Length: 327
Image (cartoon, rainbow, N blue to C red; front, side, top):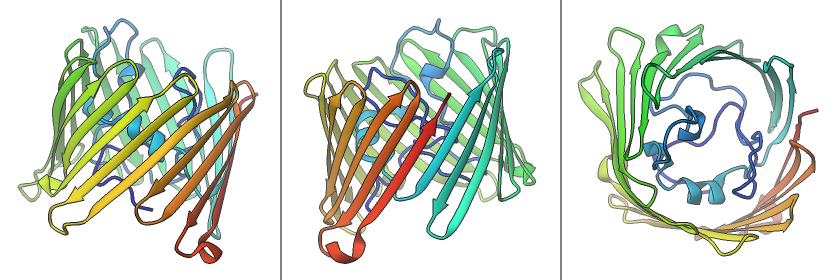
C-alpha cells in the first residue's frame, strides 16, 4: 500500500481509533515495539498542551493531518488487543498485544501525572523501555518540554521543546549525545491559513537529513494542504472535506520528481450511526481497504479492516482485527 512519503508520523504508542471528529477516544493504531525516538517532532499535539493556549494552527506535524487521518489512520492487517485500566488518582495502565504474521509483540504502558508533569513508561517484549516526561506551564503559556529516554540505548534519547501561540507553533528537539541530531520545525499563521517548514541537521555528519515545507488552508468543513517533502524531491497535495455530519471525503496526490511517478489515494468516511463508523480507501495501484468500527460500550471499540489488491484478489486479501477495552 502506498503511503505518504516523509510526512510527520501519526502513530503514537497509545493512540485512538478513528472516530467522527467530535469524538475523543483512545487509539488502536499504534504498533507494538520500536521504542527508539524518531528524528521528528513528538506526537504530542497542540491539544495536549495547557487549555489556556489560544486556538491556533498547532505544530508543523499537523499540516495536512485531517486528510492523513482519514486516509491512513487505523487501517491495519494485524490482530491487536488493547486493555486500559485507570485508578482514581488518574494513573493509567495500558497493555497491548499484537500479532504480526507469525510474531506476537506486546507492551505495557503506565502513565502518571504530578501537577504539571506527566510521566509515561513503556516496556515491550523486546526488552526495551521508553521513559517520556512531559512538563507543561514552564512559566509561559503554551510552552512545553518533553524528554524521551530509551533503554538500553540511552544515547538515542532526546529533549524537545514545544511552544504554541495564537499565530505560531514551534518545535525544537536535540538528541542526548555528543553529536546530536537537531530537528527544528515551525508553522506560522492561524487556523485558516498557515505555512511552515521542518528541518533536521545531523551534527555527526554535518549534513541536513531533512528539509520539508508546507502550506495549509482550513475552514469549518474543508482542509487542504500542499507539502514539499524528501528534500524537495516529492510534492504532496491533500484535501479533506466534511460533506455533512455523517460523511467526509479525502484525497492525496504525491508526485516524485526523481522517478516521475504519481500516487493517488482517495478515501471516504461515513457514520452509520452514532456508535459505528465505516471507511473506504482506494489508490491508483489497485489497492482497496475497508474499515468498520463500533463503540460497543464507552471507550471500548471493535474494529475490522480488510485490504485487497484488485489485480490479484484471490491471493492478496488481508484482514485486521482490533479490540480496545477500557472498563
